[in-house]
Length: 595
Image (cartoon, rainbow, N blue to C red):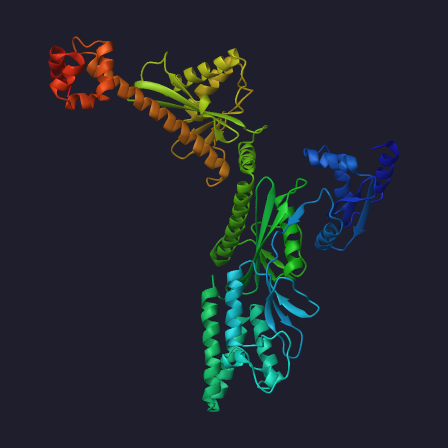
C-alpha cells in the first residue's frame, strides 16, 4: 500500500460514522473484495487497520484494500440483511461462501380461479403462491398426498371446459371444474384450507371442518357430514404422525450450528402446533475468522431469504448480541423446547457428517487433513500432528515386562516404524521407570541417527507415566520440541504436563476417535508381542530341561510337531523317528511330569 493510499484510508477512517451499517472494501481495480456489517462502523472498520491480526487471511485482505465504501442503516439487523444482499450481488473473494448443491422441492398453488397444487423445483412467485422448500422429500410427498386426498383439486395442465369429466373425476381425484361439477366458491374454499395447512395451521382447519360437519348433521345432511368426517380422519391421522413435541407449542423457529475446520452448518426447523413442518440446513464455507455467533446470524439471514419472515419466537443454542426486529429469542435449558433444540442440532450434525463422508469418498486425503486439523485445535498445538508416536507398557504380574510403540503418519499406521522394547534396567512391575527407560532409548536413538522427532507423543497411562516420559524428554533436551500428552485409561481423559484438569475433547469427535484408534493399536501390538514371548518361554522351559535334548534336537521336534501340545500327544514311536528310541522315552517321561 503506497503512501497516497494510506493517507486516503486515514481520511476515510477519520470521517466514518459511528452508526450501524455495511462497509465494502475495494481493491486497486475497484472490485469489491469484502462486505461486512457493523454495529458501529467507525470502530469496526478502524479495527482492521489498528490491530495486529492473528489470521493470515485478514492480514492479506488488509494489504489488498484500496478504497472503502459504507452504507448507514438504522439497526444492526438491517445491516445484516443488507450485508447478505450485497454478498450475493458482488460475490466478494474474502467473504464466506454460502453453499447449496441441491434445489429443494416446493409446493406451489397457482393464482387463478381454479388453482392447481403441484410440486416444483423452480417456483415462480409471480404466478404462484409457494411453500417450502422441503428438505425431506418424503415428508413433502406425504403432505401432498394427504392434501390431495382430503381436498382434491384439478390435475390438468390447462383447464378446458367440457361436458364430460375425465377419468380423474371417476377416480375421485378431481372435482371436475371443467364440467362445472364444483362451484368456484367451493373450490376456492378448499384451496384456502390447503394453504392454511401448508402454513402449518392444521388445528384451525380441523376445527372449521368439525363445525361444518356438526352443522350438516344438525340439518340431517348426513352424506355431506360423512364426507367432511372422512377429510377429518385423513388430516387427524397425518397430524398425529407429524407431531414431535407438545402440540401446544406453536409458531417457533429453531436454529442451531455445528462446524468443522472448513465449514459451518446452520440448521433451521419451523415448528407449528408441535409438528416440524420445515427443516433445512445451509452450509457456510469459512473464509475469514468468524465467530460462531456471526456464522449463525449469517445463516439465519440466508434462511430468512428462502423461507420468509421469522416466527415471533426463535429458539437458539446461545444468546445473540444482535437484536432481531419483532422477534423474541429464547435459549431453552430443559423441557420440550430444549428437545427441539437438540433435534435441530442432531440434524445439523448429521448433515455435516454426511457431507464429509461424501467428500472423503472423493478425496480420502481430505478426511485425514480434517481430523488432524481438529486434533491440533483440540490439543491446542502450534503445528499439525502429522507424525504421532504412542507408548504402552505390558507385563504379567511383573514378569516379562515389555513396552510397545506405534507410529501414525498423516492419521494412518506406519507399521514399519512400530517398535518393541525389552526392558533392560527395571526389575519388576515399575511402569514409571519402564516408561522413562523406553522413551529415553527411543529418542536418544532418533537423535543419534539424526531422524525427525514426532509432532505428538501419546503416553497410554495416567499422570505418573506422563511425568516419567517428560523427565526423559527433559534429560534429552527435547521437551520443548515435541508435544506430549497422556491418556488416562479408565475415563480416557487427556492430560498435559502441569495441567490439574484434563483437556475436554468431544468423545464422539473424529479427533478423539483417532486417539482411541492409536491407543488400541499400541495395546494390540504390545499384548501380541507379550503373548509371543510368554509362549516362547513356555516352550523353552519345557524342552530345555529335558536331559539329552539340545538346541538342535529341540528345533527338529518343533519343526516336526509344531507345538509342545502336539509333542505330548504324539506316540513314543513317532518321537523316536526324530530323536531316537532312548531320547524319545525321556521326552515322553519329562513332558508327562511337566503337565
